[in-house]
Image 1: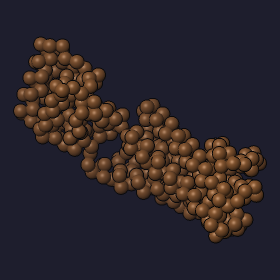
Image 2: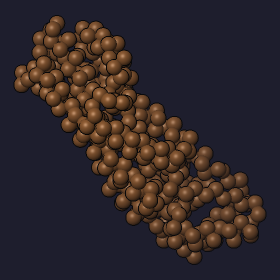
Image 3: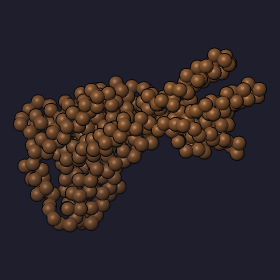
Image 4: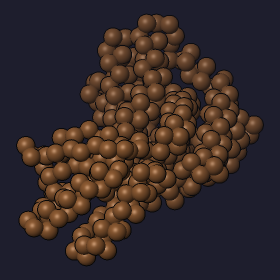
Length: 351
C-alpha cells in the first residue's frame, strides 16, 4: 500500500485494512509513505513502471497482478475479494512481479500522489536555490583564475582556435567530474537515510560559507580564505601548464576539480543536502545537470571571449584581481539568502 500522510482517502483505507487484518490473520500489509519519503516514492515509481501503469494518486494498492487506486465502498469490496482469492491460490509478491497481460487496474476516489501544497512550496524554492547556488560557484574567483592560467599556457604554444578547444575540453571535464561527485554523494545520502540530518548540517554550512565570503570582501586575505589554499596553487599551476593538447586539458580538468573543492564545494554540498531530502534520485540527476551547466557557463564564456579576441588573458586576470572582493561579496550575500530560505523551510516544517 502506497499512501500519503494527511491524505483523507488513505486514512479511510488504512482503517479498512486494520479491519481486514483482524478478519484475515494471515494477511500481510506493507505500507509505504510517499509524501515524505524519497525512497518510498522511488519504489512507487518502480512498481508502477513494472506493472505498466501510470501513477494516478494515493492510496494505491498492489496485490498479486492487480493495481487498485483510491478507496470507496466498492473498492473495499474489490480489495476483500482479492484477499479471499489469494487465500485460495498462491498469490505472488507484487514487488517481485513484472507486468503481464493479466495486470488489471481498478481506480476509485483518490488523492494526489504527493502533498500538493508542500510540493508546490518546495518546487518554488528548490529551482531558484539551485540556480543561485550554482551562480555562487560560477562567479568564484578561483574558478576564473584556473581557466586563465590554462588559456595563457595554451596560447603560448598554439593558436586561438586550438586554445578554444583547450578551454571547452577543460570545462567539459569540470562538468563531468563535478556531476559524478555530486551524484555519488546524493546516492549515499538517500540510501543512508541521513538526508534530514544532513539537510540541517548543510543549512548551517550555508550560513558559514556565506559569512566567510562576506568576510573576504571586508578583510581579504585574513583568516580562512574561500579560495584554493596557497600551498596547493603551485601543484595546480604545474598541472595546468603541463596540458599541451585539448585532451591534456580535459585530463587536467579532472585533477584540478579536486583542487577547487575547498573554494567551490561549499554551495554544491548545500545543494546536495537539499536534493537528498526533497527529491527522488531521477529528479535529483536532472537538477545536478542544471546546476553544473550554470557552474561551467562562465568558463565557456571566458573561453569564447579569449578566442574572439575581445580580451587577453592578462586583461582578464587584471579584471579578476580588481573585482575579487566584489565577487566574494556577491557570492556571500547569495549564499546567505539561500541559507535564509533553508532555515525558513525548517521552521515552517516544509522539510
